[in-house]
Every structure is written in structure tokens, then in C-alpha cells.
Image (cartoon, rainbow, N blue to C red):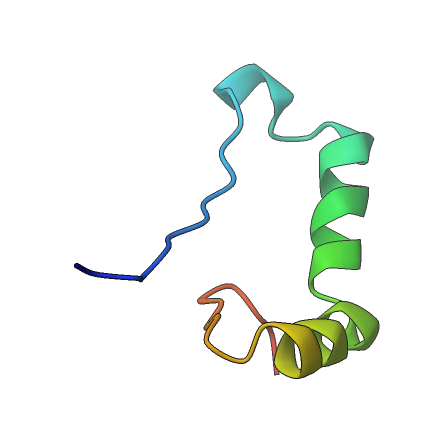
Length: 51
């Protein structure tokens, strides 16, 4: 059994410039979220994190 999990966020093309979506992406890529994931979910390797 594979315990891997893929989490992908998608949006309709007509919503790609929605400021709420851009705000969510900014928060998800924040250092605080990255730190939380590293501490609480060490097996989670998000592909979308900016360095």
C-alpha cells in the first residue's frame, strides 16, 4: 500500500486572476505554512513551495 498523498490546487481558467486565489497561494507558500508542514507533517513534500 502506498501511503503517498498528492495535493493539487486547481482553478477554472476564468478564475486564474481572482485575488482570493492569489492570496491563498501566497499564504500557502509562506514560511509559516512551510514550517508548520515540516514540523507536523514530515512525510508531506509539497512540490509548490517556493524557496
